[in-house]
Image (cartoon, rainbow, N blue to C red; front, side, top):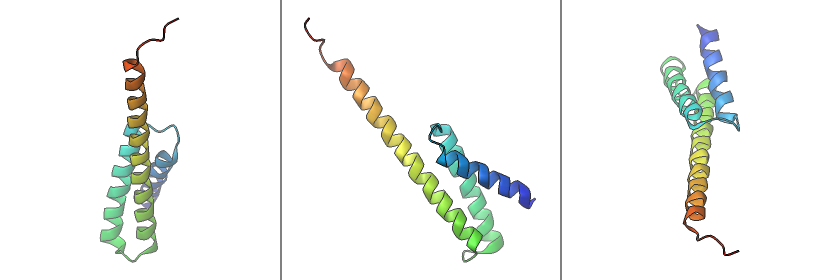
Length: 90
């Protein structure tokens, strides 16, 4: 069972660090890390080193999701501005 947990943790951490990750990938990584953190809290307690590492991974995952959404919003804003600009006279 431990190997399954470790694989899920590694997969979620990898997804959250992937520059090509989609929003769905980042959401899945966050959900997985949150689930693993809750399990570690129940089993190991909040002072266990693995629990602390999972908390750090979850925090990083949340930051990556916020950055992804901010970039997407900026790109959408730029696209809207480009569409609303009148064409230049030739």
